[in-house]
Every structure is written in C-alpha cells, then in structure tokens.
Length: 365
Image (cartoon, rainbow, N blue to C red):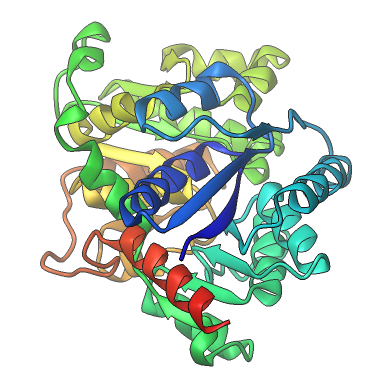
C-alpha cells in the first residue's frame, strides 16, 4: 500500500524540518510525497541553498507567492494550494510549524476534507499578538493528527480540549536535523570570517515583534554593539532586518560594530552555532540548535515556546527593553551551562516516527 502526502513548506525552518521527514518517507518505500513550496521565502539565500544542502526533493510546485501583508499572502496561498489539492488528491496534507504557509495548507485541506497532520503541534507562547501563535492555534484545531515535539506541547493541547489518539508525541525533527548536520558543519566560514572558536557571539533577529518596533530593534542592536566591545558579534541579516537597517541611519550606526553577513546555509549556520561562545536570538529553531550544540542561549523575546530550555538552564529570556539589559544578559550568560543528561526532544528518530504514524493511520481510515 502506498499513500500520497502533500507537504507544504514556505519558510527557512520548514525546509530543515521537511528534509528530515522527506528522507524518512523515501526510506519507508510506502509514501509518495508531493512537496509544495509556497514561495513565502523566495530568495536564493533563504531557500534554494537549503534544498540543495539538505537533499530535499525539488518541489513539484513552487507557488511563488512572495511577501506581502498577512491577509493578502495567506489568501494567495489558499487559492493556489486548493488548486494543487484538487489536482493531486492526496491522502494527507502535512504542514510544519507556525507560518502563514502552515495556516493556508491546513485551512485549504480541511475545507476540501483532506486529513491534516501538523508537525510541531502544541507549541504555545500564550501571546496572541504574535501571528505565529494565531497560525499554530488554528492549524492545531483543524488537524486530524497532532505530531508533537515535547510533553509540554501535549499538555498545552490537553488544556484546549485536544487529546486522545489525535495527539502523538514523536519528538523534535530539529534534533534529527542537527544529527544529520554532524560532520557536514565545517569550519571554513569560521576561518573566512577570522573568528576564534568560543570567542564570539552569534545572533539572529527576524521576528516582526522586534524588527518592526524601532525601540526594540534599537535595544537589540545597541546591546549587541556594547557586547562587541568585548567579543565579536556575528549577525547573519534576515532580508527583513537588512531592509529596515538600510532605511534608518540611527539603526545602521548601532550595527556598525557588528560583523554583518548574508543569510547562510544550514551547514554554515551549524558551524557558527557549534563554535560560538553564546547565541542571542529571537528564533525558535535557533534556541533549540543552541541546546543541541551545548551552547548557552539568550532569547530576545518576552516569552518562548521552548520552556524546557529555560527550565533546564540552557536558555535565558531577555525582553529587549534596553540596550543595557540586552548587553548584561549576554555577557553574564557567557560560559554558563544548563543541566545535562536530559532528552526533552526525543531520540533523533522523529522523522521515522512521523512516517510510521501516517502509514498506520492511513491503513485504519
């Protein structure tokens, strides 16, 4: 028996997760996958290189939706994904994470009565001002299978009345991905940038709550600038952040002390993470990658979905209220380690578990 899975991806973290699951599908020999790239991230630095490095099959469809307001972007995705579903008639719609691509895929499939499976279900920041929070809540309530990364996610779903056989703890596909990176994370980029291992800070900033708020972004860049007086700070610039800096002389001046680089591929990013003294980020995925590499992390947000890392002492939350607060949090956390021996994200076999679950439930239905 072979089943057909329509997988929707559109943003950088989803490419990484999809690579794990796609390899498991191919290894199963019983799952035919049709991948749809919405084009939410459409430039080469943010998408193409990931498909090449992570051996993801070339998407059968590239919807080329591009950027835009939430309503316009999601509406274009809905229209185009619906056309693909009608053409392909899949057994499952598979969506990842919490982007507009996730929401559009889940909604389009649900309206056409195609079962939806949500990878990374159950995450909650409890901040509904975040578009990602709205997306993940709606996707979870539309999904027929909720494939969770942690016990915390299961508890979150239970509080919303979602439970039973629909909720299945599979572990975190990002842990699978970090194991796959392994020896592929070379040190060429470290050498090219003139960095000394364990003697620099790595930072990423992309969330709209930070980039679209001048005061928060100034606090982050000002704090990183202060840190750069003591340790080099490497900041791969998300396109959104780069555009904002280009239009604001004050913010550009704050970033002048930082080592600004273009977005990098997955293996180069893994090399930066593995060699950094500390990682300061507002990215959910990078928080976990810091933990996988045994690096302390400062999360530049008011909350995090990955509460396990805070509880284990690997992650410190620091809302970017002032440059001084950001700098103090980073400098005081360098060298600190959390608890060891825990396995909050599973055993590195989440991809295989997801493939097994989809096949098992397809046979029952």
